[in-house]
Amino acid sequence: MRSQLLTFAFATLSAGHGIVTNPTSRSAGNAMKAVCGQQVTNNLQSNEYGDIQQLSQIGSSQPDFNATTCEVSLCKGLQFDDNSANVQTFTPGQVVPITVDIQAKHTGTCNVSVVDTATNTMIRNELIYFPVYASTSTELPKNNTQFDITMPDVSSQCGTAGACVVQWWWDSRESDQTYMSCVDFTM
Image (spheres, rainbow, N blue to C red):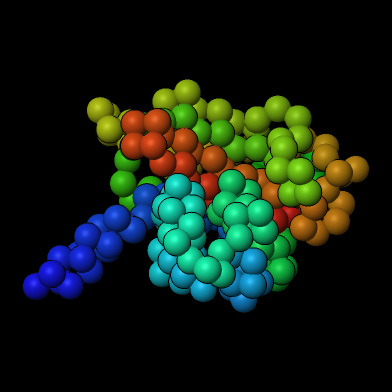
């Protein structure tokens, strides 16, 4: 009975909350396993919707996890080498439709930005910002799950695949959880 309760508790803890489903965002594979370890990779392969705090917590108890090489604050630790077949090509001024699947709401803020993967820093300003996102006190507005971004001219920084991502970042202080997805692109 105890093992059933533990299994249920873990399944409840790992229930997902949100990801970008279009354009295709990064997913876990062997390159992630090499830098983040087996358990963190398994967790993301079984539940890509989870938060980065959970990944850090799971990883910290594993001997093959290294927080320096598995930077969960950058694309959940998901690696470009596992996703090189999904690189988008964007042009300056291109309007890009974004689709997000939210499985559970947690009031927070959200932004979508172009991020330099070498430094994990935002390039220019946010492309879109939601001061209140996925609020638990209202119905989920359609613009939280379907919206457009307009790509700035970042061709000088993002001409090489893997150098930049479009990052969706949803941070809920209500639940102390942060969700993200990264879309690899070149310009």
